[in-house]
Image (cartoon, rainbow, N blue to C red; front, side, top):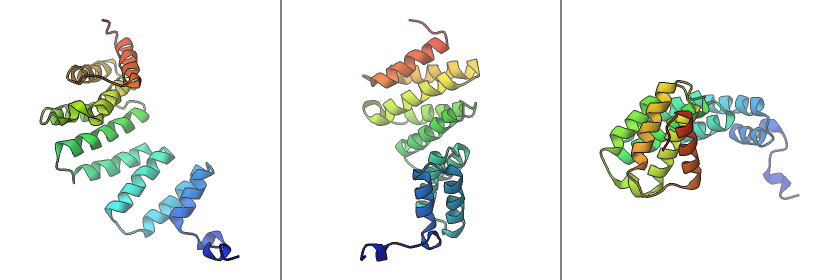
Length: 182
């Protein structure tokens, strides 16, 4: 009985974000989106709100909305490391959207940032970013953009010691798609 008193007895008494999470858990994305949008309207603007929305939009498959939030987040980043991290997140979303041509802009931005520091070479940031660029090359419909993306990723790959198997598999598939053979 004491536990029951700790929880709302009707949906109307629940927090909107809780309702979003519940409906998402039960795979009712339209209802989850409805509650998320209500929460968004009521919640004051903050970095925390943007973070919650970014992840929620990714879960709902609303990748363009997540990209918009990431672009806003990017304006607040100062370090090369943080910028690359956001650029990679945006690139991954463009890949999920079917390899839209705009993804190449973010690969070029990553390359400019990578040229500013070396720390990316021995850590996960570099490996994950290389994998993301290979995966983008696989999905991208435009053959020229796909080849350019592969070339950037391959040049970065040449600067590090190793890649995990999943990234090597993506590299192989991208090379095949682009008709690059060893």
